[in-house]
Amino acid sequence: MTDVFLDGEILGEIEEPEQVRQKLIEQRREGLIDQEVNVYYAEDKDEIRINTDSGRILRPLIVVEGGEPSITEEEINELGEDLDLKELEEEGKIDYLDAEEEENAYVAMDREEVTEEHTHLEIDPEIINGISASLVVYPEHNRGDRVNFGAKMVGQGLGLPSLELHQRFPTRSNILTYGQDPIVTTKTYDTLVGQHPIGQNMVVALASFDGYNIEDAVIMNKASIDRGLSRTTYMRTYQTEAQRFWGGQKDKIGIPDKDVRGYRREEVYAHLDEDGIVNPETKVDSDDVLIGKTSPPKFLGSDAGEIQMGLADRRETSLTVRHGERGKVDKVMISETGDGDKLLKIKMREYRIPELGDKFATRHGQKGVIGMITPEENMPFTKQGITPDIILSTHAVPSRMTVSQIIELMAGKVGAMRGEPVDGTAYHNESKEELKEQLEELGFNSTGKEKMYNGVTGEEMEAEIMIGPAYYLKLSHMVADKVHARGRGPVTLLTKQPTEGRSQEGGLRLGEMEKDVFVGHGASLLLKERFGADSTEIEVCNECGEIGVYDRKENKKYCPNCNSENVDEAEVPHAFLLLMNELKSMMMDTKVELEE
Image (cartoon, rainbow, N blue to C red; front, top):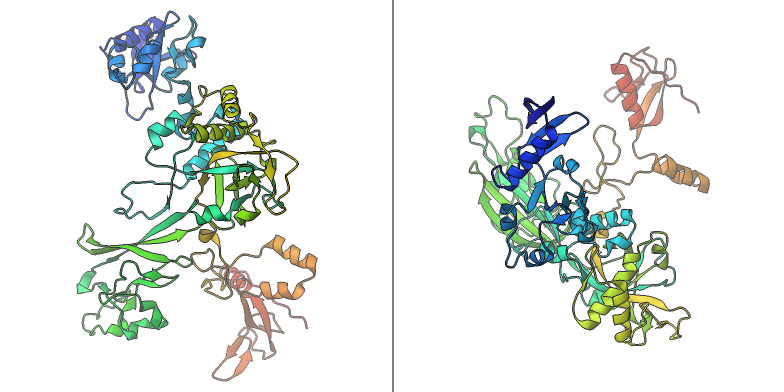
């Protein structure tokens, strides 16, 4: 007997599982059972599983009966215009399958493939790719891993995330100034992305230029950048609350009094208005104060009520610009939280122009950073005087086999010249042969290559160069977010070593391997300096090796262990002192032996 499960709970046993499964599916197609109920027969376990629970991902497939799809090509073409998917569901011509029922199905990708054995047919073969991957053009000419990379890049491309971005206060977002629709596009792009472009069409040449596009770097045309290519606006929201505490204490928004300012420089408050909040369109720099705020002391004693709370006792909790960021105040919002506390949000923006080290990518996983920005007059040009916006290294293509990148260059040329986009949708797109014919009709070489001239010398180049428009994405990895250095700065309390990370004004770590490089160069003094970041002076007893004491009052050094005054100074890393103290706390003694 076959066990039957409904949403994981056993219902009972039956004798003819295959017939029961067929019967249930027929009833579903007739509308007697809900469209979203799925029936799966697991042969290996001899179980029928009926799933009705929420959260299953279902996908539509055309029903195939007796080797014939139940929907004609005419009906598919009418979809969205005169025909609705709902109507086809009601007629039982479309099944929604979940991951389990799909195991019982035999799905054809294309109409031509359908045989007697098939149970279903894909509405469109492109659907198997998923959303991100279906934005890649001509993916069937790429290696699978590159389509995967391309899908990842598409997700990182900066664009226009929302049409009402001025009203929103996102934690952080990047907005492309002049987004464009791609010349070579896919059906998915039009449907899903449409109003929200993620890149720009750039004229791409596959060539080398003084070797500055080695290791996947790209060379960019300075004139293109000056005309607005790949410019973005970086936005970040800062927020703070004026909270109320027990005992009538509360945070105060306003310019802090001189008593509270403490170590702060006078000029950090220069941007604040009388109410202690910065005004829109104010230019602010790293660590500047955006909102002046003071809070009651953290620890109030039991007799706190009797003490008159002076201003000097309040601590400063002003909201400042993150270290390493700058920009203009875009918008200020004053509201309140659910508890009725005052809520302040400040949106800052920074206009960014592409610079050396900013990351770009195509939809084919060809990613690289800017290696050089060249004046237009030095760029190679075609006989029509066209200079590329970007020069991609020729070495980026052969080993990665991104043939689609080359097809896109040809298709982009055709699309730009004929004035309408080229369809590069997966598995059914404008064929390469047609594109080649159109290129010749438009007066170009069918290969997409052109004779080019050296911009520096004016000579004709020996090799013909592949050139054409392609869709390039600017990715969110920008130098402005990552560049980081420090001379002196804050250290951690415990180890007295520099803090970690750019936001904390941290240092760059010099590790074991970096040390080896300095050793190899014989730069021993530099190493001494590097590794002395947390050096601490300690007193060591020469008799017993314990850590000694320096009594400031008596102005004498002695050993608390053996009372000897034979104590010398030594310089050790603070982390080493910490280790010795931790060992002591675990009842393990350490002995330090000094050498001259």
